Length: 354
Image 1 (tube, rainbow, N blue to C red):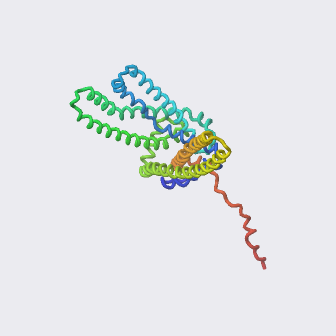
Image 2: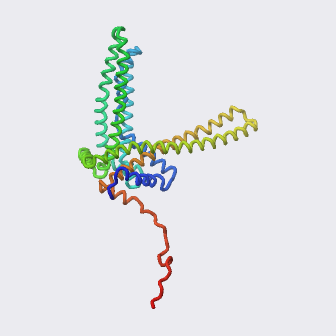
Image 3: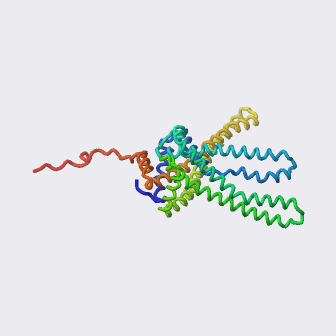
């Protein structure tokens, strides 16, 4: 497979997304693959954000005066953190399964889930340790600020002028932390794109996979940087475009349902059915339909974009990593050629020899 630049990989990625999700289109199958793609993206970055609430425990206890919150609040925070960790482990393992589905045009999630359990657990541990360390680094200034603010609030009331200054300082730190979190999520997304194929296809160690990624970045700094930027631009544009399409479809469906409901309600009212019963029937019919639409469409919108981005990363790596290139070509059907009749049927017979 030839090496594709960050811009050249867009077209084959679009074609493969159509091949994976819509060839053929079956409502259940397409939704399953799109939802798998969406859930796998949750396993990209581990940040135990609920633990930040532990910094606020002294302030909560002091303001409420309820000392039982000293153990109740931390218990709830630790439960949420454990639940988040559990879901993260599942979604992180799902990344490997969906990587194989896009690479080999698979349709079944469970076999791939079991196949990549060992490398996914190693990669998940690495992300958990890295994310936890970053969380400590980012939240340390916030913890110091909270301790400082609690001390000020308990001190003399003559320091009111310090509070606005400290508040704006906190907002500045919080905004900086949020921007840093977005950049970190972006970097981890690119790292997942490059490291997961090495871990999945060769079952190598985390250190070896990171070394491969490092060599790729050093060898093609410009293309890797362009890929990282293109991934953000394409993801945002794709999300906006697909959302607009689904909103148009949703508007059309809503208009049809509204007209049908209006006609049905008028018929029921003319038949003598009480208005409160007609209203209740309307809610009983429309609410499940709207919920079903959103449950089906929201994962579908995100899943289409995530499938495209995964395909985009594979075609970018395909020419640079021979194993991926061979598997992509093997799992891509050849272009259909029209079944023309033989040339002799189209051309007149040659003149007889003299």
